[in-house]
Length: 178
Image (cartoon, rainbow, N blue to C red; front, side, top):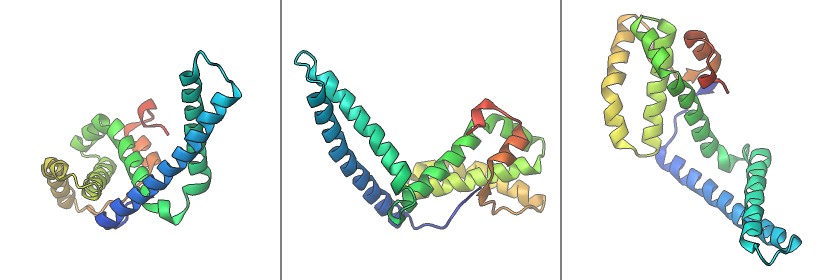
């Protein structure tokens, strides 16, 4: 289950920038080391660039592994991980948007709740990333759904998302699987 959290956009941007710089610095060290090491290990004077690229790709894979294994739970990665999880949740909904909107039009309450979470999540992502034009584009659709939910007496503060509920509403689909 994913839950939308209150987050200061300035703090979010600062902390994600700092996390990105740390991961990039790690990649520079690991990438250069593996690139040079791979080239030195398999010395081939006819194709050194290919060996260096392969070494750099191995370094990139190592950085992904190190980040996933050791860094993802660190406090300095919290905002970056939150943003990634929010975007992943929104992606699942986006992949099933056509079916979800059809269910909303048919009056499905659970579909309305999921679509409301989507609107709140996208609004937060746009706010965190300073995408003001995206906020303007979403405003009318967001207000229309909120009004429909209020008429039905539904809570418009849908801050949690469960993939299982989305699958239950739109049916199993390859496009919304993990």
